[in-house]
Each structure stands twice: as C-alpha cells, then as structure tokens.
Length: 511
Image 1 (cartoon, helix red, strand yellow):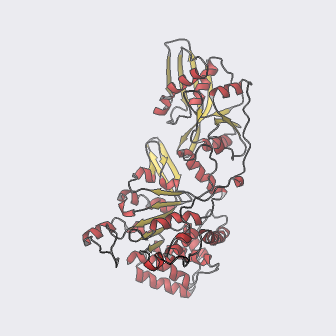
Image 2 (tube, rainbow, N blue to C red):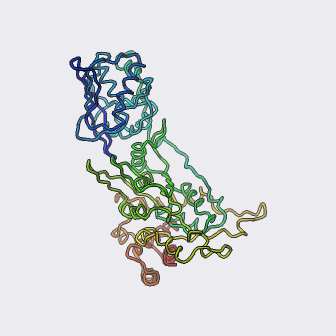
Image 3 (cartoon, helix red, strand yellow):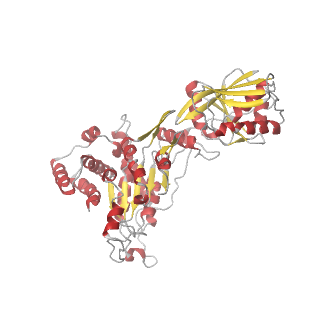
C-alpha cells in the first residue's frame, strides 16, 4: 500500500516541498530502503523509525519497504524526515488513516517515540504559508519558532503515539495560539556597561558613531587596553531589530539550529565573536551542502574579530565582497545558495606580535621585519572597507586607580543607546522606501542626494584626499561617517567639524 506525506527540504535559505512516498509491499524479500538523494542522517532514519515504532506499541511490518523523497533530483539532508516516514509506514499497514486535508509533518524521532527539537521549523512555517498548507505538525520543543507566522496552524507534537491518537480522534492536540511579533520581548545581553569602562573616551565615542550609522570599526592597541571590553559593550547600545530584520535573522538561526528549544522570533541584534582558528568555511559559509557562516549569523548585527592579523589571509580577503554587497553567494555542483550578510565588522589587533610597539612604558621586542610581516597580513583593500580606524592606548594610571568615591563614570549604555536610537530614527525617515536602514549602507547616488557638501566642507575633503591619500571608496566612507556624526547632533547638513572628526578616525590608516 502506498502513502504520501508532505514535508520539506532546505537548500540554503530556500525551502522546497518534498513528498515522502512510502510503499509497503508483501511481495519480495523484507527490506527497508530510502531513495531520493538522502544523506547519512536520513539513511540512519531506518533504525530510528524502526525502534521508535516498536517502543510506541506498533509492530514493524515484515515486508519490502521503499521510501522515496520526491523530487528525487534534489539532495536531502536532516533528521526531520523521521516523522513523515513513520507516518507513511503506519498508514500503509492500516494503523492510521491520514486526513485528506494536506499538512506538513516534520521532526526527528527519539528511540522511545518522542520528538526531539528539530532545526528549520521557522522555515517550514514560511513554506507552509507560501504553499497555502494550513496545518503543520512539529516537535513541541520547536513549535514556538513558527507560532509568529500568520495564516497557519501550528500543532505541537510530543510523541509519535500522541500524533497517531490525534489523527484517529482519540486525543486531540490543541493548536498553539498566535503570538504577535511585538509581544516577544528580549533583554539585550550586555557583558559590560559603558560606564564601567575607565578612560577610553575617544574609543567610546567611536563606538557610538559606529552603532548609530552601522559603520565598520577597527581598533589597534596594546594588550590590556580594553579593546575586547569595548567590543563586548557594543550590544548594549544597539537598537532592537525591526520586524523585517527579525524575520531575516530568525530564518538563518532556525536553519542552523541556533534557536534553543522553546525559542521563537529573535529580537536582539546578533553579536558573533569568531576565534582566529575558525576555518574559511566557518567564517564565510559553504560546505558540500551550503550552510551559513559567521558573517551570515551576524546579519543585522555585529561580527567581532579579535586578533585580526592572526586570521588566515584567505579568510580575511573573502570578507571583502560580502562587506561591500551585504550577501555571500556560494556555488556548488548541486546549485547555488545566497545568504544575507549585512553585518557591522568590529575588529581588534595589536600593533606588533608582542603588542607593545610604540608603548612608552613597555619595550617592544619585535624586529622591524617581524612588525612589517605582522602588519602586512591586513591588506589595503580590506582596511579600506573599514570606516573607523582607532588607536586604543593603554589606560592612564590616574584613570585606572582613583580614591574611593572619586570615580567619575561616563555616560551609561542606556543613555548612549537613547542617542543611538534617535540617530537611527533620523536615518529611517531619510531612507524610507529605499531599502536602506543606516548611513553605512548608502550607495554613491544616495551619498550625493542626502549628503550635500558646502564649499568649506569640500575644501577640507579636498585637502584630506591629498594629505591622507584617500581612495575613492575611503572618500565616500568619510562622508557617510560625517553624515552619522551630524545625525547624532541632529544637524540637517554636514558641517566642517563633522568632517574633521570623521577624518580623525580615518587618518589612523596612514600613521
């Protein structure tokens, strides 16, 4: 007897409906085979399904079982086919009669018949809405991912036995109530508050500018100067994701299994910190079946790369295209996948291998050749794509050690965040309908439209091009940073002092 169950396959961020065809025949030798380009995870489903059926009180048929995942020309991966395969077998032996109304079934089975947390449920919900399939049956631990999607019914399933009883009308599973995206609140994870950071006023100002305009930032300084602390304080001043951004980030996190059991829509901007031993595929994305890398996991958020010169040169150079385009395209023989990668790059580095080049109180032990080799790991084209370049010196002793009660803290993250939000609101109003959220993403035509330059400003920029040897790309980036500084002051036009401050950060490249 033949059964057909609906499920899906994920190829990158594309979700394709898959028909799981299960045929149980009494003719032929007993066997269990899965065809339709399955990977190792799906091949192992045979043992999981067989044991789960037995432990759920169902007799596994002694027959020739063939499972076909159609269309057969698309590679399939993942353990979520367990549930539709088990349902197809039970329908074929008459243990359950599936309803005529089409539904999606999705989930990995444990050996005891319960359903495990399965990644990709949010993408399944979006596919169901697009295909006009009203009902989806998913593991209860993963059901909250899809509960924010309108137009579908989400049924949380605890076990195979529970689902069979539901279909047979013995124990009805109640669908989850819809949750509006606005009702989901998440606290911003903050490792450090800005008022906890002693000194480094210029660095904190640069981070405020970067957060306000979505600009890339590079910090260079000796060990212990606070570069990592500054970077980890950044999430505390970033605005929350809007609804469109939240959906995009949630799709990526659902695909990669980064939404924890019971989790739902992601509302906090991602902060990803990649170690310098991360492979190129881990950083950029890829693999035989393309998966997102750290740059996509940092979409609409921050990618922090500490010890930047320690990363492989090939990995750093691969950052250039997604930093410019906001997407990463990965082509394989089976097809191509495109992942979004609109991230803020925050990078940190020491000035030399020992870290103390130019420090008045510590002697640098590196030779000039070692310093040159170390600094040459960062190519000009990569550094040209970073808007703000900052020297972070060691904290002065007077600021580090103060008598009790004489601590003069700077603005807190909460106060700075309010200024950032105000600047972002100005930008949202400016770019309404253009698909641009922040100043850093302006193209040259938007720069010319929204950043008119007065003669005094033009004179400063002309002098800067010659003095700092700015490339055309760097020239436009200086204007974008100037626009952000003007927004922080709620100024309509870019003024000379705004350009002067922007150039102050850009000049670090040539020092």
